Length: 164
Image (cartoon, rainbow, N blue to C red; front, side, top):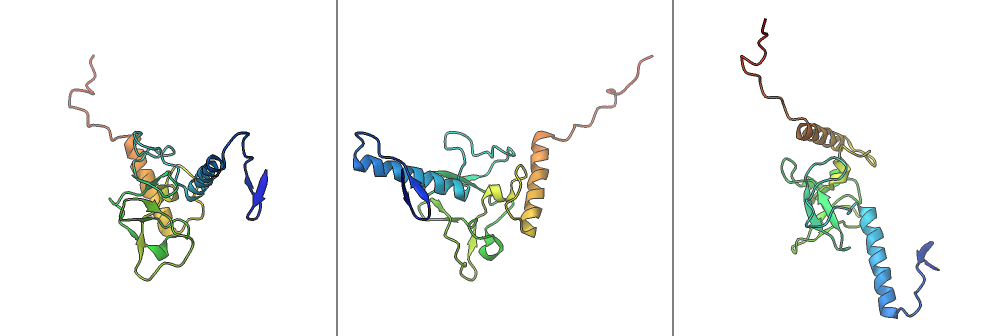
């Protein structure tokens, strides 16, 4: 097993595997690690864009690493000023509809971004919450509660009558 870049391990090249096939496999494995680190672990189509941890639906986008990411819907949330979102959680949508998470650089003044659902998911512990993320997580918990426990319909006047 080879090693590069501060201990990242390369898989062994399989017997009879061409160099092209080997490096293609390395690229796919690297993409999978990048996707996992960025939180791009959404179910791919045709599965519905639903969070496996809380059951809420979110906006699903393909990523540059050939994975899928769930981003908070634009209703009721809108794009958020990037400086309010922790680095490595600032998702942008390219003109071709592909989502990407820029490296941990400072956003330009006035720049906005999309928020990954996992950052405000009520079904998981937050990585390092900021105050507005806590509020959004609580709102999502309330929405998820309504999803699974809809309000009871009022009973009719004869439904609770006691017979003698």
